[in-house]
Length: 96
Image 1 (spheres, rainbow, N blue to C red):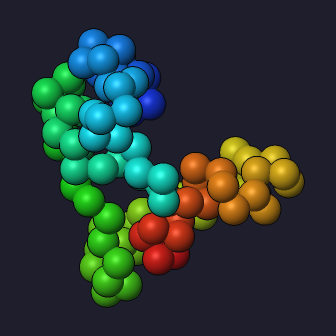
Image 2: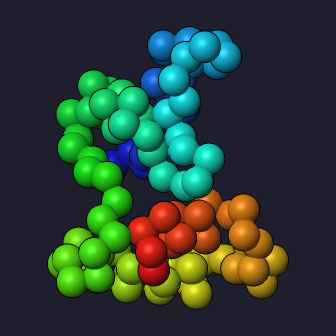
């Protein structure tokens, strides 16, 4: 299965999203924008949903547990403490 980042890069190249007036596909706060989720759906047929901040929600619990484990396993000491790393941005956006 292709990664989301690869699909987004292909979409940006295909649609010419490098223009300054085009809607960004990635949020500066971490994750995808609504336009990015729609572009991913057009490209792959997959359905991505926006972040959930309610700690009682099952998606929230699952995402936070999975991403915290990925952060511990896949990031070095520099990226683990870097507030601008994609994994830290996504954890903040989800409220983990």
